[in-house]
Image (cartoon, rainbow, N blue to C red; front, side, top):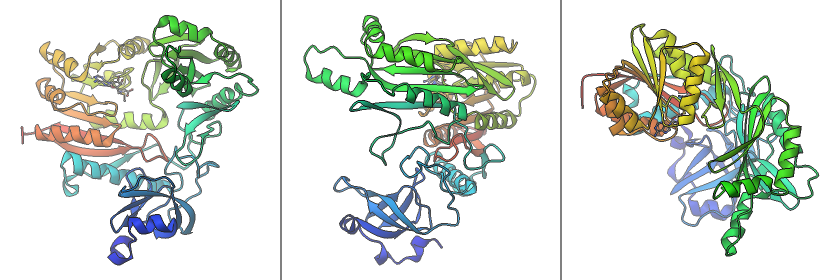
Length: 491
Ligand SMILES: C[S@@+](CC[C@H](N)C(=O)[O-])C[C@H]1O[C@@H](n2cnc3c(N)ncnc32)[C@H](O)[C@@H]1O
């Protein structure tokens, strides 16, 4: 019996009690959706980031919460009775940075949380009860330990505070941005490049505007020209220190304005100094809206993915972690059970990773993606690997699949790997017309993926394997992976 059930109803405080007391001791009932601890109240919930189920903690209610909200938030002041699962987060900023939500729990505890999360969304959105589900497997690098630094791609927010710049991750738990130059989730090479960018602001007497300030002024002053502001700095440093940095500016109205941004002071002088300070093998570009200018080569990098070396550019989607992605791809290959003569369709192929991994094991592989730049990267990658039986087509889910079906294309195997939105029933219906029999669905948003799985089940498909892919260890995120087979027909 869990702690909530053991407690009599009268013991749960109400939302009003919690607000009035401000600081109180609570027992944590369970995990919330984003890995926080939560307490059932008489008439609502209390969410406590950093607390674990079964713990007794002293908490302080966060200030400024909306009147009438059924969920309140509180911070941990002291853990009075720790869970046996509690571990040292191995991060000096863990208490103020909420980038990783589960650094303080054992790896096994984290994986159990993730497996349960997948089972819950499949039950809720795909309509498959827990009893009917296959057991949720875990796809994660082995051996796995807290402190693994897998992440090589990240985005740094930028904020000017007086005559100083803050650069890092926005954290609701602290006043400002959290520096990421020592972030233990990042690879060492990525941490170093973050450090170079941070240092490039030191001693600057004049600083680039921040984008928010530029927009605020523009909104207030009639005819005011939007000034260039740094909104975000994106970087990816995959291996051997070869990487890409892009400084994203306030959105430019047109090319002439973008040119003006690139040459304006103090932005241009800072960008020049940053280009000099970055390691030789790290490229630098400045971008705004659809415009981009390369300030320092390279403009493409190679990322190792299993037996492939995938080339990517600034406009391509790539995984943020590599070792976990390799584990995922191995599972996809194995789960699909490809036969030599089969045709394989990679829906949401990006730079072509899955199609190129599958190509040697099937008759032909075809990738579909709406991102034209990624289709070109996928073609470059096919040529680079000497793979002749993989082809790539540009198109959205529905139009792309419809065109393939109308052209008489047939496939027995497929993967679907969208972003965070479901494909929807109309697009999924083409899979049957295309002859697909076995499908592996890779859903970065488990809830969106489960909705698509629900639609597939209604069309007669059956889920026979489920997994949580741990692409972002120590966070609450996991990817829903499902193998689906075409069964008997519409329910
Ligand atoms: C998570 S990425 C998958 C990339 C690839 N499967 C891989 O493993 O590297 C999702 C891909 O879906 C594509 N995408 C998003 N919305 C789409 C749509 N409506 N139609 C077609 N492709 C779409 C994106 O361009 C992106 O490349």
